[in-house]
Amino acid sequence: MRTIFITSFHPHISRNILATSAFRILRARVDLCIVVVVPHYKAEYFKEKFGGGNVIIEGIKPHQASATSRGLFLKRLAVLFFDTDTARARKRYEYFCEGRYGYYLVSRMTGFLARSGMVRRVLRSADYFFSPKGFFAHLYDRYQPDIIFSTDLQNENDTSIMQDARKRGVPTIGMIRSWDNPTQRAIRIFPDTMVVGSDTLKEEVIRYCRFPASRITVIGNPHYDRYLAGPSVGREEFFAQFGLDPSRRTILYAPVGDHLLRHNDVDEHVMDILTRTGEQVLVRFPPDEAVRLLNFIKPPQMGYDRPGRAFRQATFPDREITPEDDRRLIDSLFYCAMAITGPTSIPLDAALIGKPSIIVNFYPTPRGFCGAIYSYWCSHIKKLITTGGVRYVQSPEELLEAMEDYFRDPSLDENGREKIRALWFSHADGRAGERLARELLSLLGLEDASPHTPTGARGLASGSLSF
Image 1 (cartoon, rainbow, N blue to C red):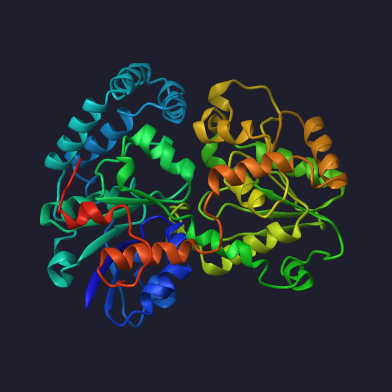
Image 2: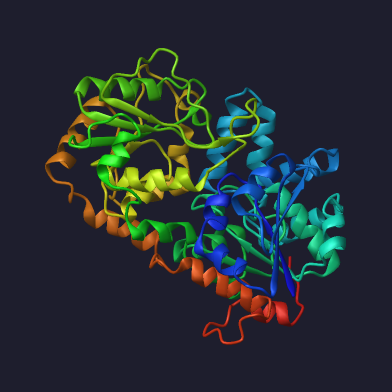
Protein backbone atom coordinates (compact mmCIF):
# COMPACT_ATOMS: atom_id res chain seq x y z
CA MET A 1 0.00 0.00 0.00
CA ARG A 2 1.35 3.39 -1.07
CA THR A 3 0.11 6.73 0.25
CA ILE A 4 -0.31 10.07 -1.51
CA PHE A 5 -1.31 13.43 -0.04
CA ILE A 6 -3.43 15.63 -2.33
CA THR A 7 -4.06 19.24 -1.31
CA SER A 8 -7.33 21.08 -1.93
CA PHE A 9 -7.19 24.54 -0.40
CA HIS A 10 -8.49 26.59 -3.32
CA PRO A 11 -12.18 26.54 -4.38
CA HIS A 12 -11.23 25.45 -7.90
CA ILE A 13 -9.26 22.33 -6.93
CA SER A 14 -12.24 20.10 -6.25
CA ARG A 15 -13.32 20.90 -9.82
CA ASN A 16 -9.84 20.78 -11.36
CA ILE A 17 -8.70 17.50 -9.79
CA LEU A 18 -11.15 15.69 -7.52
CA ALA A 19 -14.10 15.71 -9.93
CA THR A 20 -12.01 14.42 -12.85
CA SER A 21 -11.08 11.07 -14.30
CA ALA A 22 -7.61 11.43 -12.73
CA PHE A 23 -9.07 11.11 -9.25
CA ARG A 24 -11.43 8.33 -10.29
CA ILE A 25 -8.49 6.33 -11.63
CA LEU A 26 -6.54 6.82 -8.41
CA ARG A 27 -9.40 5.87 -6.12
CA ALA A 28 -9.96 2.66 -8.10
CA ARG A 29 -6.53 1.40 -6.99
CA VAL A 30 -6.64 -1.10 -4.12
CA ASP A 31 -2.91 -0.58 -3.54
CA LEU A 32 -3.16 3.16 -2.93
CA CYS A 33 -4.27 5.27 0.03
CA ILE A 34 -5.31 8.82 -0.88
CA VAL A 35 -5.31 11.48 1.83
CA VAL A 36 -7.01 14.69 0.68
CA VAL A 37 -5.99 17.61 2.89
CA VAL A 38 -8.61 20.37 3.05
CA PRO A 39 -9.63 23.32 5.27
CA HIS A 40 -11.07 21.89 8.48
CA TYR A 41 -14.46 23.59 8.11
CA LYS A 42 -14.96 21.99 4.66
CA ALA A 43 -14.08 18.45 5.73
CA GLU A 44 -17.66 17.17 5.92
CA TYR A 45 -18.43 18.47 2.43
CA PHE A 46 -15.37 16.71 0.99
CA LYS A 47 -16.26 13.49 2.80
CA GLU A 48 -19.73 13.64 1.29
CA LYS A 49 -18.56 14.38 -2.26
CA PHE A 50 -15.23 12.57 -2.53
CA GLY A 51 -14.60 10.41 0.56
CA GLY A 52 -14.96 6.69 1.11
CA GLY A 53 -13.05 3.62 0.02
CA ASN A 54 -9.35 4.35 -0.17
CA VAL A 55 -9.93 8.13 0.15
CA ILE A 56 -9.42 9.74 3.55
CA ILE A 57 -10.36 13.39 4.10
CA GLU A 58 -8.23 15.29 6.62
CA GLY A 59 -9.25 18.78 7.69
CA ILE A 60 -6.63 21.21 8.92
CA LYS A 61 -6.73 24.84 9.98
CA PRO A 62 -5.56 26.88 6.94
CA HIS A 63 -3.24 29.90 6.84
CA GLN A 64 -1.38 28.95 9.99
CA ALA A 65 1.94 30.19 8.64
CA SER A 66 0.73 33.71 7.84
CA ALA A 67 -0.86 33.91 11.30
CA THR A 68 2.72 34.31 12.54
CA SER A 69 4.64 37.53 11.93
CA ARG A 70 7.53 35.64 10.31
CA GLY A 71 5.25 33.67 8.00
CA LEU A 72 3.31 36.76 6.96
CA PHE A 73 6.53 38.63 6.21
CA LEU A 74 7.85 35.84 3.97
CA LYS A 75 4.51 35.53 2.19
CA ARG A 76 4.52 39.25 1.38
CA LEU A 77 8.17 39.10 0.37
CA ALA A 78 7.31 36.58 -2.36
CA VAL A 79 4.85 39.11 -3.80
CA LEU A 80 7.24 42.05 -3.59
CA PHE A 81 10.11 40.20 -5.26
CA PHE A 82 8.27 39.37 -8.46
CA ASP A 83 8.17 41.42 -11.63
CA THR A 84 5.74 40.92 -14.53
CA ASP A 85 3.11 43.12 -16.15
CA THR A 86 0.58 41.43 -13.86
CA ALA A 87 2.64 41.99 -10.71
CA ARG A 88 3.26 45.65 -11.58
CA ALA A 89 -0.42 46.29 -12.34
CA ARG A 90 -1.50 44.69 -9.09
CA LYS A 91 1.04 46.64 -7.02
CA ARG A 92 0.03 49.87 -8.66
CA TYR A 93 -3.62 49.13 -7.99
CA GLU A 94 -3.19 47.96 -4.40
CA TYR A 95 -0.42 50.26 -3.16
CA PHE A 96 -0.46 53.34 -5.37
CA CYS A 97 -4.25 53.64 -5.45
CA GLU A 98 -4.39 53.33 -1.67
CA GLY A 99 -1.93 56.20 -1.30
CA ARG A 100 0.85 53.96 0.04
CA TYR A 101 3.40 55.62 -2.22
CA GLY A 102 6.47 54.64 -0.21
CA TYR A 103 5.43 51.00 -0.21
CA TYR A 104 4.70 51.22 -3.93
CA LEU A 105 8.20 52.58 -4.68
CA VAL A 106 9.77 49.84 -2.55
CA SER A 107 7.74 47.23 -4.43
CA ARG A 108 8.99 48.55 -7.77
CA MET A 109 12.61 48.40 -6.58
CA THR A 110 12.26 44.89 -5.16
CA GLY A 111 10.56 43.84 -8.37
CA PHE A 112 13.54 45.09 -10.35
CA LEU A 113 15.93 43.14 -8.10
CA ALA A 114 13.80 40.02 -8.56
CA ARG A 115 14.77 39.89 -12.23
CA SER A 116 18.04 38.35 -11.06
CA GLY A 117 17.91 34.56 -10.92
CA MET A 118 20.45 34.55 -8.11
CA VAL A 119 18.28 36.88 -5.99
CA ARG A 120 15.30 34.60 -6.51
CA ARG A 121 17.30 31.51 -5.47
CA VAL A 122 18.53 33.25 -2.32
CA LEU A 123 14.97 34.28 -1.46
CA ARG A 124 13.62 30.73 -1.92
CA SER A 125 16.37 29.35 0.30
CA ALA A 126 15.74 31.99 2.96
CA ASP A 127 12.00 31.37 2.74
CA TYR A 128 12.50 27.65 3.36
CA PHE A 129 14.95 28.01 6.23
CA PHE A 130 13.08 30.79 8.07
CA SER A 131 9.45 29.82 7.43
CA PRO A 132 7.56 28.40 10.42
CA LYS A 133 7.03 24.66 9.91
CA GLY A 134 5.36 21.65 11.43
CA PHE A 135 1.72 22.57 10.79
CA PHE A 136 1.18 19.24 8.99
CA ALA A 137 3.48 17.16 11.21
CA HIS A 138 0.67 15.09 12.74
CA LEU A 139 -0.51 14.05 9.26
CA TYR A 140 3.00 13.07 8.18
CA ASP A 141 3.44 11.04 11.39
CA ARG A 142 0.07 9.32 11.01
CA TYR A 143 0.18 8.38 7.32
CA GLN A 144 3.87 8.38 6.33
CA PRO A 145 3.10 9.57 2.76
CA ASP A 146 5.20 8.42 -0.18
CA ILE A 147 4.62 11.58 -2.24
CA ILE A 148 2.88 14.94 -1.88
CA PHE A 149 0.76 16.28 -4.75
CA SER A 150 0.47 20.05 -4.40
CA THR A 151 -2.42 21.07 -6.65
CA ASP A 152 -1.84 24.83 -6.28
CA LEU A 153 1.86 25.64 -5.95
CA GLN A 154 1.38 29.30 -5.06
CA ASN A 155 -1.13 28.67 -2.30
CA GLU A 156 0.21 29.46 1.17
CA ASN A 157 -1.05 26.17 2.61
CA ASP A 158 0.53 24.18 -0.23
CA THR A 159 3.79 26.01 0.45
CA SER A 160 3.66 24.92 4.10
CA ILE A 161 2.92 21.27 3.35
CA MET A 162 5.77 21.14 0.80
CA GLN A 163 8.19 22.78 3.23
CA ASP A 164 7.33 20.06 5.74
CA ALA A 165 7.85 17.49 2.97
CA ARG A 166 11.27 18.93 2.13
CA LYS A 167 12.28 18.75 5.79
CA ARG A 168 11.24 15.09 5.98
CA GLY A 169 12.65 14.08 2.59
CA VAL A 170 9.23 13.25 1.08
CA PRO A 171 9.13 13.70 -2.74
CA THR A 172 6.79 16.38 -4.10
CA ILE A 173 4.97 16.98 -7.37
CA GLY A 174 3.24 20.30 -8.00
CA MET A 175 0.71 21.70 -10.42
CA ILE A 176 -0.01 25.19 -11.73
CA ARG A 177 -3.68 25.76 -10.91
CA SER A 178 -4.70 28.33 -13.55
CA TRP A 179 -3.65 30.05 -16.77
CA ASP A 180 -2.79 33.33 -15.00
CA ASN A 181 -0.71 31.85 -12.16
CA PRO A 182 2.82 32.00 -13.62
CA THR A 183 2.62 35.79 -13.96
CA GLN A 184 0.91 36.44 -10.59
CA ARG A 185 3.56 35.74 -7.96
CA ALA A 186 6.70 33.75 -7.21
CA ILE A 187 6.75 30.05 -6.34
CA ARG A 188 8.16 30.04 -2.83
CA ILE A 189 9.36 26.42 -2.87
CA PHE A 190 10.05 24.32 -5.95
CA PRO A 191 8.57 20.81 -6.10
CA ASP A 192 10.73 17.98 -7.35
CA THR A 193 8.65 17.83 -10.52
CA MET A 194 5.79 19.84 -11.98
CA VAL A 195 2.82 19.21 -14.25
CA VAL A 196 1.20 22.01 -16.27
CA GLY A 197 -1.81 22.32 -18.54
CA SER A 198 -0.26 23.58 -21.78
CA ASP A 199 2.92 24.38 -23.63
CA THR A 200 2.28 28.08 -22.98
CA LEU A 201 2.13 27.52 -19.22
CA LYS A 202 5.37 25.57 -19.40
CA GLU A 203 7.08 28.43 -21.22
CA GLU A 204 5.77 30.97 -18.69
CA VAL A 205 6.80 28.88 -15.67
CA ILE A 206 10.31 28.66 -17.09
CA ARG A 207 10.46 32.35 -17.99
CA TYR A 208 8.80 33.98 -14.99
CA CYS A 209 9.30 31.46 -12.19
CA ARG A 210 12.71 30.16 -13.32
CA PHE A 211 11.63 26.55 -12.88
CA PRO A 212 13.91 23.99 -14.67
CA ALA A 213 12.43 22.88 -17.99
CA SER A 214 13.68 19.30 -17.53
CA ARG A 215 11.38 18.81 -14.55
CA ILE A 216 8.12 19.93 -16.22
CA THR A 217 5.59 17.61 -17.85
CA VAL A 218 2.75 19.00 -19.97
CA ILE A 219 -0.38 16.92 -19.39
CA GLY A 220 -3.33 19.23 -20.22
CA ASN A 221 -6.11 20.34 -17.87
CA PRO A 222 -8.11 17.37 -16.52
CA HIS A 223 -11.31 19.31 -15.87
CA TYR A 224 -11.46 20.35 -19.54
CA ASP A 225 -11.81 16.68 -20.53
CA ARG A 226 -15.51 17.03 -19.69
CA TYR A 227 -16.00 19.81 -22.25
CA LEU A 228 -15.25 17.43 -25.09
CA ALA A 229 -18.14 15.19 -24.05
CA GLY A 230 -20.72 17.89 -24.83
CA PRO A 231 -23.69 19.04 -22.72
CA SER A 232 -24.98 16.88 -19.87
CA VAL A 233 -28.71 17.57 -20.40
CA GLY A 234 -30.97 18.49 -23.30
CA ARG A 235 -31.63 22.10 -24.30
CA GLU A 236 -35.18 22.21 -22.94
CA GLU A 237 -34.23 20.71 -19.60
CA PHE A 238 -31.29 23.10 -19.27
CA PHE A 239 -33.25 26.31 -19.86
CA ALA A 240 -36.15 25.10 -17.70
CA GLN A 241 -33.82 25.37 -14.67
CA PHE A 242 -33.82 29.15 -15.09
CA GLY A 243 -37.34 29.71 -16.37
CA LEU A 244 -36.05 30.65 -19.82
CA ASP A 245 -37.39 29.87 -23.31
CA PRO A 246 -35.31 27.11 -24.98
CA SER A 247 -36.44 28.28 -28.44
CA ARG A 248 -34.84 31.73 -28.09
CA ARG A 249 -31.23 32.61 -28.81
CA THR A 250 -29.47 33.33 -25.55
CA ILE A 251 -26.46 35.35 -24.38
CA LEU A 252 -24.31 34.12 -21.52
CA TYR A 253 -23.12 36.98 -19.30
CA ALA A 254 -20.41 36.26 -16.72
CA PRO A 255 -20.08 39.33 -14.43
CA VAL A 256 -16.75 41.04 -13.85
CA GLY A 257 -17.25 40.82 -10.06
CA ASP A 258 -16.49 43.23 -7.24
CA HIS A 259 -12.89 42.11 -6.69
CA LEU A 260 -11.46 43.62 -9.89
CA LEU A 261 -12.46 47.25 -9.31
CA ARG A 262 -13.16 49.49 -6.33
CA HIS A 263 -16.71 50.42 -7.20
CA ASN A 264 -18.42 47.82 -9.32
CA ASP A 265 -20.99 49.68 -11.37
CA VAL A 266 -19.87 47.86 -14.53
CA ASP A 267 -21.98 44.72 -14.15
CA GLU A 268 -25.22 46.63 -13.58
CA HIS A 269 -24.36 48.87 -16.56
CA VAL A 270 -23.73 45.94 -18.93
CA MET A 271 -26.75 44.00 -17.71
CA ASP A 272 -28.92 47.09 -18.25
CA ILE A 273 -27.64 47.37 -21.83
CA LEU A 274 -28.37 43.69 -22.46
CA THR A 275 -31.85 44.10 -21.00
CA ARG A 276 -32.65 46.95 -23.39
CA THR A 277 -31.75 44.78 -26.39
CA GLY A 278 -34.63 42.44 -25.52
CA GLU A 279 -32.38 39.41 -25.95
CA GLN A 280 -32.66 36.45 -23.60
CA VAL A 281 -29.74 36.46 -21.15
CA LEU A 282 -28.39 33.90 -18.70
CA VAL A 283 -26.21 35.49 -16.01
CA ARG A 284 -23.73 33.10 -14.43
CA PHE A 285 -22.29 34.71 -11.33
CA PRO A 286 -18.70 33.96 -10.25
CA PRO A 287 -18.72 30.98 -7.89
CA ASP A 288 -16.23 32.54 -5.46
CA GLU A 289 -16.54 36.31 -5.93
CA ALA A 290 -19.26 38.74 -4.83
CA VAL A 291 -21.29 40.79 -7.34
CA ARG A 292 -23.30 43.71 -5.93
CA LEU A 293 -26.43 44.54 -7.90
CA LEU A 294 -27.88 47.39 -5.85
CA ASN A 295 -30.04 49.12 -8.43
CA PHE A 296 -30.80 46.42 -10.96
CA ILE A 297 -34.18 44.76 -11.38
CA LYS A 298 -34.05 41.41 -13.17
CA PRO A 299 -36.27 41.38 -16.28
CA PRO A 300 -38.36 38.33 -17.27
CA GLN A 301 -36.03 37.37 -20.13
CA MET A 302 -33.02 37.07 -17.79
CA GLY A 303 -32.10 34.03 -15.69
CA TYR A 304 -29.60 33.79 -12.83
CA ASP A 305 -27.18 30.93 -12.19
CA ARG A 306 -25.52 31.28 -8.77
CA PRO A 307 -22.89 28.53 -8.47
CA GLY A 308 -20.73 27.76 -5.46
CA ARG A 309 -21.26 25.95 -2.16
CA ALA A 310 -20.99 28.45 0.72
CA PHE A 311 -19.29 27.61 4.02
CA ARG A 312 -18.73 30.95 5.72
CA GLN A 313 -21.12 33.66 4.53
CA ALA A 314 -18.90 36.44 5.85
CA THR A 315 -16.04 35.27 3.60
CA PHE A 316 -17.61 35.08 0.16
CA PRO A 317 -14.59 33.77 -1.82
CA ASP A 318 -14.21 30.80 0.52
CA ARG A 319 -16.58 28.50 -1.35
CA GLU A 320 -16.38 25.35 -3.45
CA ILE A 321 -17.33 24.71 -7.07
CA THR A 322 -19.49 21.60 -7.06
CA PRO A 323 -19.55 19.07 -9.93
CA GLU A 324 -23.11 20.24 -10.65
CA ASP A 325 -21.91 23.85 -10.93
CA ASP A 326 -19.29 22.85 -13.48
CA ARG A 327 -21.76 20.84 -15.55
CA ARG A 328 -24.09 23.85 -15.75
CA LEU A 329 -21.24 26.05 -16.99
CA ILE A 330 -20.42 23.57 -19.75
CA ASP A 331 -24.10 23.35 -20.72
CA SER A 332 -24.36 27.16 -20.69
CA LEU A 333 -21.48 27.52 -23.13
CA PHE A 334 -22.91 24.91 -25.49
CA TYR A 335 -26.45 26.29 -25.51
CA CYS A 336 -25.78 30.05 -25.51
CA ALA A 337 -24.94 31.90 -28.71
CA MET A 338 -21.99 33.79 -27.23
CA ALA A 339 -20.35 34.74 -23.94
CA ILE A 340 -19.90 38.30 -22.66
CA THR A 341 -17.65 38.92 -19.68
CA GLY A 342 -14.72 40.90 -18.29
CA PRO A 343 -11.08 39.77 -17.91
CA THR A 344 -12.02 36.25 -16.79
CA SER A 345 -11.27 32.71 -17.99
CA ILE A 346 -14.71 32.37 -19.65
CA PRO A 347 -13.31 33.33 -23.12
CA LEU A 348 -10.95 30.35 -22.87
CA ASP A 349 -13.81 28.02 -21.96
CA ALA A 350 -15.84 29.35 -24.88
CA ALA A 351 -12.96 29.14 -27.36
CA LEU A 352 -12.36 25.48 -26.51
CA ILE A 353 -15.77 24.56 -27.95
CA GLY A 354 -15.64 27.20 -30.72
CA LYS A 355 -18.04 29.74 -29.21
CA PRO A 356 -17.47 33.50 -29.70
CA SER A 357 -16.91 35.76 -26.72
CA ILE A 358 -16.77 39.48 -25.98
CA ILE A 359 -14.88 41.15 -23.13
CA VAL A 360 -16.02 44.57 -21.93
CA ASN A 361 -13.93 47.45 -20.66
CA PHE A 362 -16.20 50.48 -20.38
CA TYR A 363 -17.93 52.30 -17.54
CA PRO A 364 -21.03 54.41 -16.93
CA THR A 365 -18.81 57.29 -15.79
CA PRO A 366 -15.25 58.40 -16.72
CA ARG A 367 -12.43 57.10 -14.53
CA GLY A 368 -8.68 56.60 -14.41
CA PHE A 369 -6.58 53.54 -13.61
CA CYS A 370 -7.50 53.44 -9.91
CA GLY A 371 -11.21 53.27 -10.66
CA ALA A 372 -10.98 50.91 -13.63
CA ILE A 373 -10.52 47.16 -14.04
CA TYR A 374 -6.79 46.75 -13.50
CA SER A 375 -6.67 43.21 -14.95
CA TYR A 376 -6.60 44.59 -18.48
CA TRP A 377 -2.98 45.53 -17.79
CA CYS A 378 -2.15 41.94 -16.76
CA SER A 379 0.07 39.71 -18.88
CA HIS A 380 -2.41 36.90 -19.55
CA ILE A 381 -5.28 39.21 -20.54
CA LYS A 382 -3.08 41.23 -22.90
CA LYS A 383 -1.95 37.96 -24.50
CA LEU A 384 -5.57 36.83 -24.83
CA ILE A 385 -6.63 40.04 -26.58
CA THR A 386 -3.74 39.89 -29.06
CA THR A 387 -4.93 36.50 -30.35
CA GLY A 388 -7.91 38.16 -32.02
CA GLY A 389 -10.07 35.33 -30.68
CA VAL A 390 -12.16 37.65 -28.50
CA ARG A 391 -13.83 40.97 -29.22
CA TYR A 392 -12.46 43.63 -26.89
CA VAL A 393 -15.07 46.41 -26.64
CA GLN A 394 -14.64 49.80 -24.99
CA SER A 395 -18.09 51.31 -25.40
CA PRO A 396 -21.76 50.24 -25.41
CA GLU A 397 -21.86 50.88 -29.16
CA GLU A 398 -18.95 48.52 -29.75
CA LEU A 399 -20.63 45.89 -27.58
CA LEU A 400 -23.87 46.03 -29.57
CA GLU A 401 -21.97 45.94 -32.86
CA ALA A 402 -19.97 42.88 -31.76
CA MET A 403 -23.15 41.11 -30.64
CA GLU A 404 -24.82 41.70 -34.02
CA ASP A 405 -21.71 40.47 -35.84
CA TYR A 406 -21.68 37.22 -33.88
CA PHE A 407 -25.42 36.68 -34.19
CA ARG A 408 -25.08 37.10 -37.94
CA ASP A 409 -21.99 34.88 -38.26
CA PRO A 410 -20.81 32.88 -35.22
CA SER A 411 -17.74 31.70 -37.14
CA LEU A 412 -16.21 35.20 -37.14
CA ASP A 413 -12.80 35.33 -35.42
CA GLU A 414 -12.49 31.53 -35.53
CA ASN A 415 -8.84 31.89 -36.56
CA GLY A 416 -8.23 33.82 -33.36
CA ARG A 417 -10.03 31.19 -31.31
CA GLU A 418 -7.79 28.60 -32.90
CA LYS A 419 -4.81 30.63 -31.61
CA ILE A 420 -6.35 30.54 -28.13
CA ARG A 421 -6.66 26.78 -28.33
CA ALA A 422 -3.09 26.49 -29.57
CA LEU A 423 -1.80 28.59 -26.68
CA TRP A 424 -3.79 27.27 -23.71
CA PHE A 425 -5.23 23.96 -24.93
CA SER A 426 -2.23 22.32 -26.57
CA HIS A 427 -3.09 19.02 -24.85
CA ALA A 428 -6.90 19.17 -24.85
CA ASP A 429 -7.70 15.74 -26.24
CA GLY A 430 -9.96 14.40 -23.49
CA ARG A 431 -7.17 12.37 -21.87
CA ALA A 432 -5.52 14.89 -19.55
CA GLY A 433 -6.99 13.13 -16.50
CA GLU A 434 -5.48 9.84 -17.62
CA ARG A 435 -2.07 11.47 -18.10
CA LEU A 436 -2.15 13.05 -14.64
CA ALA A 437 -3.14 9.76 -13.01
CA ARG A 438 -0.41 7.91 -14.92
CA GLU A 439 2.15 10.52 -13.85
CA LEU A 440 1.23 10.18 -10.17
CA LEU A 441 1.05 6.38 -10.26
CA SER A 442 4.42 6.18 -11.97
CA LEU A 443 6.02 8.38 -9.33
CA LEU A 444 4.49 6.09 -6.71
CA GLY A 445 5.94 3.04 -8.43
CA LEU A 446 2.48 1.61 -9.13
CA GLU A 447 2.36 1.82 -12.92
CA ASP A 448 4.97 -0.63 -14.15
CA ALA A 449 3.38 -0.95 -17.59
CA SER A 450 3.12 2.79 -18.20
CA PRO A 451 4.26 3.75 -21.72
CA HIS A 452 5.15 7.22 -20.45
CA THR A 453 8.27 8.01 -18.44
CA PRO A 454 7.56 11.19 -16.46
CA THR A 455 10.05 14.00 -16.82
CA GLY A 456 10.23 14.46 -13.09
CA ALA A 457 10.89 10.83 -12.25
CA ARG A 458 14.65 11.18 -12.67
CA GLY A 459 14.86 13.88 -10.01
CA LEU A 460 12.79 11.84 -7.55
CA ALA A 461 14.70 8.63 -8.18
CA SER A 462 18.03 10.30 -7.52
CA GLY A 463 16.75 12.02 -4.39
CA SER A 464 17.82 15.40 -5.75
CA LEU A 465 16.17 18.47 -4.26
CA SER A 466 16.55 21.91 -5.74
CA PHE A 467 15.45 25.38 -4.74
